[in-house]
Image (cartoon, rainbow, N blue to C red; front, side):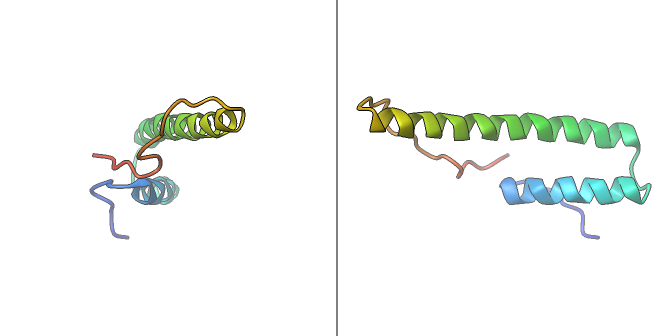
Length: 80
């Protein structure tokens, strides 16, 4: 299995999660390391959910006649 060494986008993050699960299953990494990776991925997922919620709120508010301005770079942020 080719290890992911750099995470540039959310697709890479998803592949790393799956890679971690496989490594845990095969005993290649310790459970504590897998748990640390999982905690980091949860924080990333929570951040993504906040962006989604902000975009939904902006769309609903716009329909009701309120304008919070443009939401830019949603879903295109690079992770480095």
